[in-house]
Image (cartoon, rainbow, N blue to C red):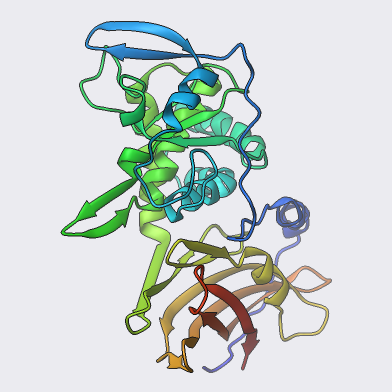
Amino acid sequence: MKLWTLLLCVASLSAQAAEFDKAILEQPSILSSTPIRVKPINPAWQVELCEQKLCRQESLIEVLRQANVERSGGGDIIGNGGGLAEQNFVYALSQLSEFIDETITAGIVKGEDITNLAKIGRHAKKAGTRAGELIFLSGKAVPGLFDSPYDQEVRLAKTALSPDAPILINLDLIYKRTQGDLEIMAMPVMAASLVHELGHQVGFEDHSYLDFLGSRVRRLLEREQNRVGRMLGHDGRIEMTSINLGPLSLPRLFMTFGDILMSFDGEMANVLKCNQEKSIVRAARIENQHWQPAINLDKHWIAPFRAWVALTCQDVDGCVTFEERDLALDMIIDVTASIAELRVIQFTLYN
């Protein structure tokens, strides 16, 4: 790909750049190997269980004890987030404040909605760094847990009007079998649900309004999310997802294989470099992503991923240049073990 450069000196970028550096340093990275711990449960926490129009309060500890006898999804025991859908939910929470910021920057919300969504975004930044913020359990194990006397539909998630409350996620809805194949909920839908629940935690009670705010974030992600997959013979499907964010952001990049989710956000921050000396990356976008043919070496797959990266670079004088580079990410996947092992062979820019 031909490298092209356009010079543009913008003195005002310096203050924005400082904010960008701070955001990157504070950005959490979720890897499939990171254990997801259950949030410590306050014995005082109560949850509402509803059957038809009658509701009662019950201890959250007792609810979790009941739910522990049944699973509906693809993970392990209750609450540990072992399945792919659970990992996607945790990853969505870790990135949600960035998703919300970009939704506002993109002008998808207006007026008072900007203020309210920004309030949820500030809370999401804190919630996204707390281990075990999400608790996954089957609603079938605790009848009435995800029901409401004001809503005929079983809800996806539930929390309380408190910023310290955990968020309960209904496993019955994030996994679905279609003609024998197990499907998981799309991440934009997960993000919209988290906006809803975190909105309750900061004091908003109107379900319809929170659904509206969540739908704005979902709209952004569906517009900016790109997914590309390839089958590795009969061993499963590998899929790479990128999400391009705003004018002072790096894209999010993560891969899934079976029940494994691996994020490359930290690696992206390290590998994205400008060609010009003393210039630093201020933003990037991933385009034209694709898998090259995989190579099978006796149950060890080599999976080559390629993409174009558009970089926004800034030098010490505040001059901005735009570069286009090629991204190469090669992985080796060992499918001989009970749980596949993934390792990065190469992650680099060239040209």
